Structures are given as C-alpha cells and as structure tokens.
Length: 126
Image 1 (cartoon, rainbow, N blue to C red):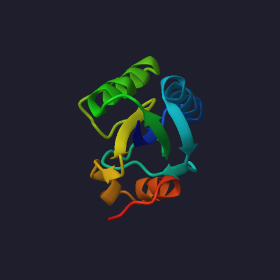
Image 2 (image 1 turned 60 degrees about the horizontal axis):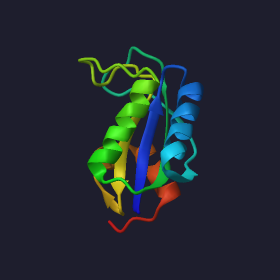
Image 3 (image 1 turned 90 degrees about the horizontal axis):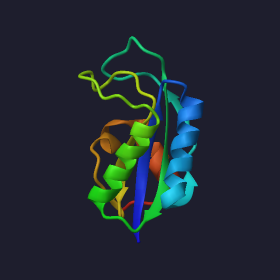
Image 4 (image 1 turned 90 degrees about the vertical axis):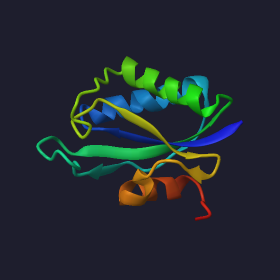
C-alpha cells in the first residue's frame, strides 16, 4: 500500500465540494485522516472568493500515475473546469503533496497552510 497526502482546496461552494471530494477519496482508497480546514486568501489571481484548504491522508494500492488519474476523475465529477488561469476559481483541486513520506509538490514549501495541513497528518524527515 502507498501512503499519500492529498492537498484539497475549493472556493466554489467549498463546504459541499470538499465533503464530496473526501467521500470520493474514501470510496476507492483507505481514508485514514483529514486535516483541519483553513480559509486562505487567493494566490496569483486575487479577484475571487477565499479558498478553503486542507489535506487528507490516504492509503492506496494504485501507483502514482493511476492515483493522479483517480484524483482528476474526482475533480471532473465535481465539475472542475481547467482554464488558462491556473490560479482561478475552482470547485475542487486535489493534488498529491506527499507520496510514501516524500514531498512531491513544491507548494508544500511555498504555502504555510499546506505545510501545516500535512504536518497535522504525518511526520516528515526533511
């Protein structure tokens, strides 16, 4: 089994979309724990609602590519539309942040809220 921390974010009806995303993660994978959720200001494109962000610790039998595809499918089911503005509003954003104890997303180092959410879930040797 692979241990994964998934970053979760939404600023379009975040309560509903984050709850649905967490439920989606738990359907096909073992949902171990969910961090506290934090309200954060938008980055890059600021003329939009605040985001709600957190993270989930999941165990999965899938490899990284297949798990990423599963995350993108959950996003699709929840109405995520990719636009040219990578910092724009979104129903849900799911990203692998930590894979088997290794940080694989640079946002971990750049965004305090993400680092704090991960630290609630796992201890990393940095």
